[in-house]
Image 1 (cartoon, rainbow, N blue to C red):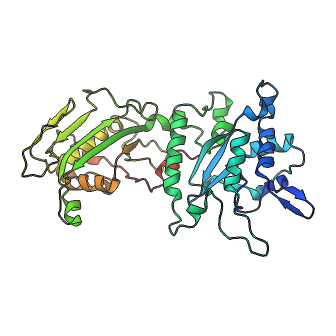
Image 2: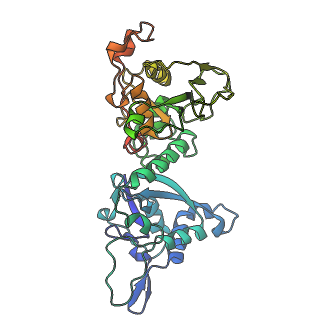
Image 3: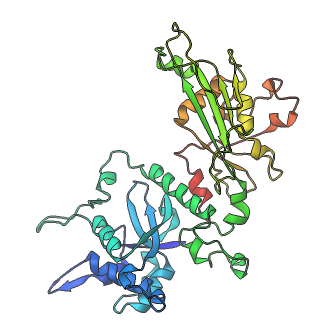
Length: 394
């Protein structure tokens, strides 16, 4: 899918130079005039049937996040064509002025009316260059200068993760209308609502049913003063708990208290160990025990993966979004605080999450003779990986 940039710091050749205001020998971009022309073109069909003032109409365009973390407003070829047809003086862009979807870490919806689009274009405009000075070779706009001046120019992975999660949720909830069961499903790319964000055409039929969501939480002893290497190698764990969403990305609520999906294991209380133990309320289904099982990470992981394991669609279950969204793989989005610590906890209690498979030699520890578990494989992708991006990208 190709996209055309609207306003902001120039990434390359600009088709929207025809929006420039000419004054004598000079020309400049006026955010308000640009916004008015874009709104005129994209609301032409709406205005014919609307009773509201033009300024009350809203449009949805695409927000692109670059690898640096900087944001860009984007239009699809269909949207550019609509502006070209309804706004005099706008030239039709050349294909080499477009950017492929792979340029961006995320492509997500953003809504505007005339006033808010004007404000956004103004925030994206590079800082004015004083007479006699050369323009900067980086984005100096109010919206993006903080990203483009950092030493680490990989902020886009973090910012893109948020936007991709937002897009995933909107696709799952059908806030972005999915393709119908007509000819659209046979011709990839014809469904403009999905094409606008380069979303997979078969998302609802093939991908969404294979996405599961769970949460894992833990408490470490707050007064642990050992060296950091010792605390990572052997976390002093006081409790762990986990639960699963009611219906994947479609219903993120946790089941009611007492449901079998709620699990908690308590090993101690967060006080100095020479003080009397304080009372603590545990929710229904909690398992209170004094001794930690060195292989309990195996049973916890198996319960987290249970929705994937129970599916007959695949024998390969990634933990986190898979980079191969076209396969029949199951996907578990695991919500955690401090992913590195979570890996340390599982490693200390019998499972190397990065290894991608369970050690068959430990199969006898609580696996109830299920030989299939020893063959289970997964792919762990943390929040800096491209898993979620590839899951929602065509």
